[in-house]
Image (cartoon, rainbow, N blue to C red; front, side, top):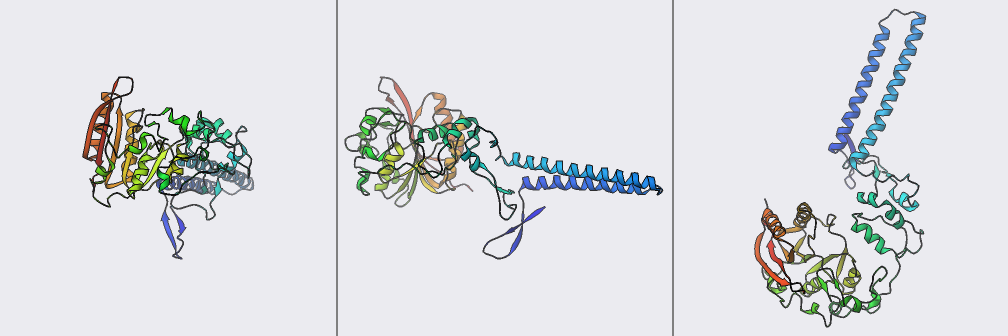
Length: 417
């Protein structure tokens, strides 16, 4: 069966084919209706084949009425069952909003809104559904706390609660009807001088963090790729990507020279710390988006204060970009930490999706925790058929006298037919 779709702008009505799921459900409904109609026809025919007597006619009418009522009940039951099957197959009805312990705002946000023109021919939906990650069901209490606020008022200072939900896989978070608490961005410099001018402590939100200023953060090692990374004047950030610390470090000029002038325009940096890679690329007139969370430090505030583009997102969700849009993807040390090989494969396939053919994948100091990890990553890269422009495996000390193995590589995505 088909459904009508009015295409705006052409002024004509066209019949569009429904989705496979919708077509299957329509076939089931058609089969149910045909079966009940045949059953009704049989009942009428059987009752009309006997001699007409007043008492028999009254009994036959009663029998037919019972059959019709039974048929109507079966149709009603089938419709309800099919509607339930459709919701389960479409997969958006996982959070039960009838629960009394859910915040009223969460219930309002999750309510389904009927489409004004009826069924959508492309998706098969009859309702508009709010986007909330299904894993949120496992953190329902935290999600309800996140949505417990005063409408049209200032939002609670609970960004750390939202990040906790994201780290548990509850992504995307629901929208809220409250105003974000204002942080006065004092001391922001104009671009491009902002790239290397020390950022003021007043630009960041420090709630939920152990440190209350960047000096405190610079005295700590945060993650595997941020040791003093908030010191833009006297720290090591000024030398990154322009001076080598070891054979695993590549220079930006050397990497850009692999594809010639103008070959790199858009880049995506995964786990970019305080945004230094994006800053160096900005000096080369290359736009880079830095994906990061605020784990133990206000990374997003700091990157934005430098005049760069932070993306507040985890690595567990599908990247919100269209296919083949980036010329360069840079993945730092935290790329693919932990988890099974399949998880790393899902990540690599999504990175391959957003990287254009001929684009570069820069794997920067990937920590090979053991030989098996290195072998698995090597096999995975070979599966994609990337050309190895640079490939360096080296060791360096972790500060305690122990040597650790790191892999750095520049890989070029092939053109697939």
